Amino acid sequence: MTTVEGTRTTLHPLPRLSNATLRQARAGVALPPYDRGRLRSGIVHLGLGAFARAHLAAYTDALLAIAPGDWGIIGASLQNPGQRDRLAPQDGLYTAIQRDGGKTGVRIIGCVLDILVAPEDPAALIAAMARATTHIVSLTVTEKGYCHDPATGRLDQHHPDIRHDLDHPGAPRSAIGLIVAALRARRASGLAPFTVVCCDNLPHNGRLVAGLVGDFAARHDDGLAGWIAAHGAFPATMVDRIVPATTDADIASAAAATGLCDAAPVTHEPFQQWVIEGRFIAGTRPAWDKVGAQFVTDVAPYEHMKLRLLNGAHSALAWLGYLAGHETIAESVGDPVLRAYVTALWRDEIIPVVPPPPGTDLHAYAADLLVRFDNPAIRHRTWQIAMDSSQKLPQRLLSTIRDRLALGLPITRLALAVAAWIRYAGGVDEAGHPIDVRDPMAVTVRKALDAAPPDPAARVAAILAIRAVFGTDLPRAAPFRDAVTAAYATLLEHGSREATRRATAARPVP
Ligand code: CS2
Image 1 (cartoon, protein in one colour):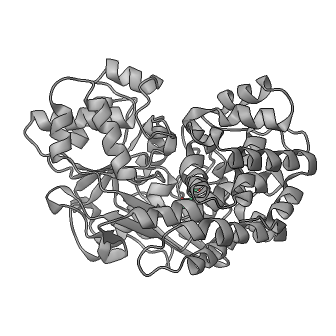
Image 2 (spheres, protein in one colour):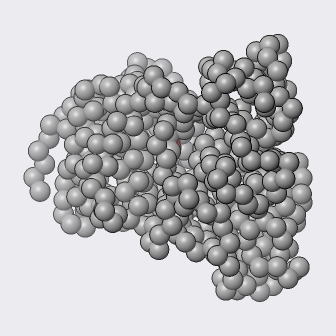
Image 3 (cartoon, protein in one colour):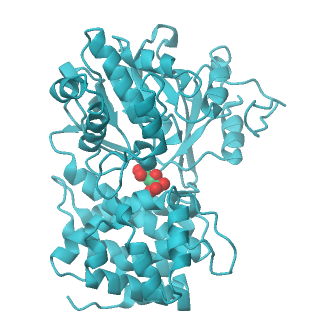
C-alpha cells in the first residue's frame, strides 16, 4: 500500500503512474503518443484543478498527439501544495476517465510538465510566466479567485489578498497580483506580454480580467497599466465540460482500469466545448481548433447561452435538489418535479431572452443539457455546485432576471431559484440538520438573515440589500422583491419539492 503524502488517500498495491511505469498501463488505455522528454512548455496555467486538467489540458494533449509544438503546461497551485504533492511523483501524468452511462474511456494525459506552488515560491512562478518561451497564461481559479466585486466586476481593493499584493508586489498571492508582477518583469526585460486566457465561468471573462489587471497595475505609477492596455491580449472564452470533484472511488477505478496507482485522476463527461476569441499576441497560440475548439470574433452569445442555460440551471438544481434531499444533479433531474421545473425554466424564462449563437437552436441545446445532467455515471454533487453561490448568482441567474424585468416579463421560476439560494444559505436543511455552506460571503449572508425580523419579506429584503451580489437596482425592483419573497415563504412553509411544483405549475400573467 502506498500512502500519498499530504492527502488521506490510500493507494492500491500497484506501481505508481510515472514516466518509468507509463508503458505498463493495461491494454486499451490511451497513452500520450508524443515524446514528453522533448516537449517544452509554452503555457503557464494558474489553478490546476480537475476542470483544467479535464478541459484545457485534455484539448492540448489531443492536439500534441496530432501536431507537435512547444505547448507543454506548467501548472501552478495558488493555495496549497496538495496537487503538486499528488502529481510530482507521477511526473505530472494523470488518468482521465470519460464516463457516459455504462461506457468508459480511459486515457493518460501527458502535457503537464511541472507544478509550482505559489505560496512556497512566488518568485519561481513569476519567473516561469516571465520566460520568453511562455506565450500564454491561462486561469481556472474559480469565481472568487479574481478578488472582484461580482456585481460591478471591479477589483475589490479591500480584499485581503489584493491589499497584501499591493503592499508586496514582489511576492503576490492572488492570481491578479501574480499576473501583474510577471507582466512587469516582461516589460523590464523587453519582452511582449503573454496572452491571458481566462477559463472561468465569468461574464465577459477576458474583458473582466483585463479590467482587474489594469486596476491593479494602475496602483503603481510606473506606466505598466498603459503598456498592458496597449500591448496585452485578454481573449474571452466559453468553457464547458462537466467535471465532478475526484473521489476515492475515482482513484480506485483509475487503478483498476490502468493497473497503475494515480493519486490525481479526473473523471468527466464525453461532452466538451471551448469557444475562444481569436485574439492572441502575435497570433501565437496552439491550434486548438484542430481538436474541436472554436475560434470566433464574438464569444458573448456562446457565453450567455452557457452561463444562463447550463450554469443557471445547475445552480437552481443544486439548491432545490439539495433541499429536496438529492445528492447529485442526476438524482435531481431524475425527480419528476425538478425535471419539469428545469424544463419550464429553460423554455419559458431563460431561452426567450437569450439570443442564440450562430446556427444554434437553444431548445435543442437545452434538450442536450438534460441528457448531460441525466448521465448517471457523473456523480456531480449538488453540494459541490452550491459552493461559492454568492459569486455565481449574478452571471447565472440575475442577468436573465434583469433582462426579463426590463421587458416586463414574469420571473416566477427564476425567483424560486434565488429564494432557494437564500433558503440554502440559511444553513439548515429541511430536516433541521446543518448545511455545510461554503461561500466567501457565508458569514455576511447568515448575519443578514439572523439580524432580520423573522418574517419572509424582512429576511429577503435583508439579503437583497447585499450590494455585491444584487447591485443597487434589484433591491428596488418591486416585482423581483415580491416574487422572491413569495417563493421564499412557500419554501419555508411547504419545502423545496412543493414550492418547485407550484412554481412550475404557475401560469404567470405576462
Ligand atoms: C458547475 C460548473 O460547479 C459548478 O458551479 O455549474 O462547474 C459546471 O459543471 C461547468 O461550468 C460545466 O462546464
